[in-house]
Image (cartoon, rainbow, N blue to C red; front, side):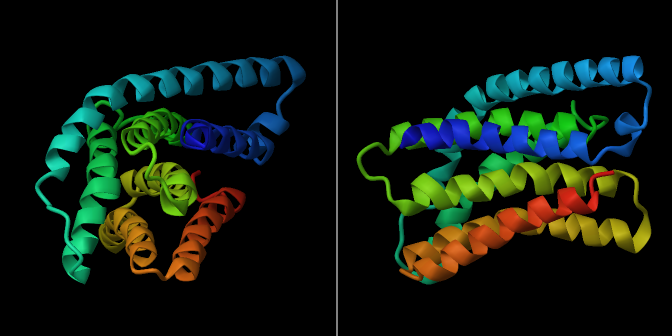
Length: 219
């Protein structure tokens, strides 16, 4: 089942890529030679960013494991939420945010999405190996689903924020900060035995990412 953590996120990224190409009117309306060249270039660059994401994840995983020790295990509701936020969301998405605001600050939606796919895939797979034998529905399905949603929601909001000003920029920044909080809420609900609510929230995040692609909010 650990293969889902490795293959689920890249497979979802390929689905996003296919939807983006299908819904992109610029490529559909081009002449056949230009369309072929655009598709070839659009395939090479995302795959290269996918590889970069894998490589970037290696040091981030070990650093994240060290930083996660700041929050000791606890069954108190708020401390439990902080632990899940740190262990499963904040440091992973934080390192992704660091890449987005530094050497990927000029990258487009697809480049950011595929970089995030490679990064989150290796992070998830390494974490699943580290907890082998004690995995549950959250580790096997719900957490990968929140990462699938994040690899779309984060680059979509970030690319839109980069071109916005004033109040819109503030709102988009708040939505970016909300992504890890909602992901941690999924884990918190599951840990509190509210499995149905955790599954519903995870599904809602995933549906929001797909709906946004269909609506073209990454353009």
